[in-house]
Length: 357
Image (cartoon, rainbow, N blue to C red; front, top):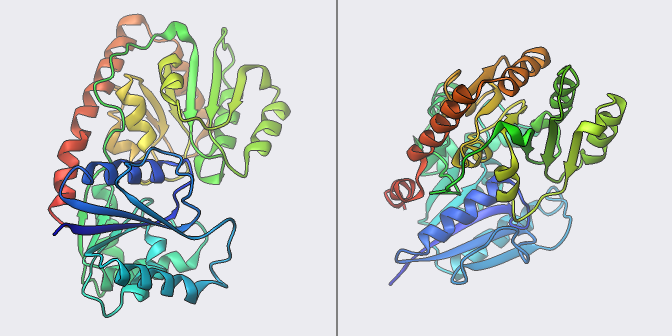
């Protein structure tokens, strides 16, 4: 009889890195002798990323929902689904889902894994996330962090830890890409949701300080509540003629292929999937050295440049430096960036998941 694995996600219809890697790992596990379920707290009827046809998808609520008002019914919905489908292992994707999953699984003989996608120091202004992490540490069988740095943050900042805290990095979603970038493309790329975390306001300010753009363009791709604010800021800074603001797409590879290098302006991260994707296409990266992830993916001065978090001037200087590299130095960085992706091959990472299911 197949073991049954259920991922609990917030909204499978979203286009973020969390949903991308969840779909990827679920698809890979479906190749083994497992029955895979994805339980989406809301929606899930139109997954943004491709999900294997053998995977069973269930959406608890449709459209916008107040989980504060639906707190009890969410817990009951999870518990009922897990019992009816006789699930063996639950993977709570993003620690906040443990606020529902921990009480929902209480008393059941279920292997429960909390899969952290930010880092312990970030609660996004939601105090329930702090409580969810305490519950996860006490009641889950495993906590999976994306970086060793975050693994230590969990261990050092919580007491009463019963869970085994381990690190399993995200895999690259693109493997074996045959592509050589070129500075002559003159495109700086940034991809991600238009929201405070991604720091696009900081990126635009840094870009405005690049004095001699010489035909270069900043291209941003994503969706989110702050999109209009970013458009307005580009106009306010009088750089809208050198900034292209696009919606998310299921063909993100084309943007990577057209870029010269990648720039990440995030205020905080977990392990940014998008950096691995950029490196898969050989793109050097300019990034804030924020918690957590960039320092584990970028070798400063070798495969890109790391600068002080939220320092607009330093980010601008690093972009300018990258734009003005000589061809040999640039291609060496491209080669080093691509080489780093070898440490994030999906078949090796799936083996680590198999060991805890």
